[in-house]
Length: 235
Image 1 (tube, rainbow, N blue to C red):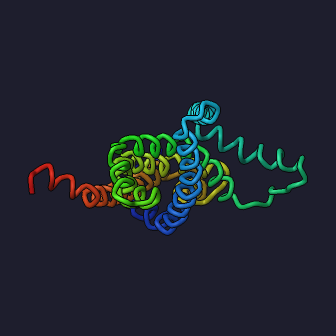
Image 2 (image 1 turned 135 degrees about the vertical axis):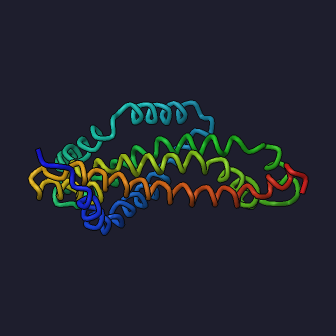
């Protein structure tokens, strides 16, 4: 059995590091499209219309019950066949397209509940007071409701983003070369050797990315809730 080679961890880290932008781009695309879909779903639930609420709840329930890797394979192998029957050929599409589509669907289900609960957490009296003071519906939302809802949503959004980053590592299973994909390539190039060292390097990279994300969101949350803290402490 080949002995453990600590120095290869550094070598693997250096080789994998340049692929971090691919992982981050995947996250950004997923947050954009998944966030938009989630926002629409949340808005539909907030209408309180029984048919819309039932449809959104059904969507969220179904998506939450599907493992990420299963949905990824369904989208990657099934979507081209489904669209082909309609005369649309996407077989030559980038793997990034299938990854973004899959994780946007998954992310939207989570974001729908994050946005809805954040909006409902803001006291309705504040919106009514804003309207009574002469602000329009849009102005009251933008100036009063949205900043408070954002502060409420931020912790759950941060947790969802970290989870998304980790689940996104599954994209290597369809051949996408991101951080995890490059790690798997390294192991393959070395004929299965240095697997442990490579995975430790991957662990370090994901840990660093997670810490950076957490620090960004912690500081953002502190800024958003600064006024509340000052009132709470009587400043």
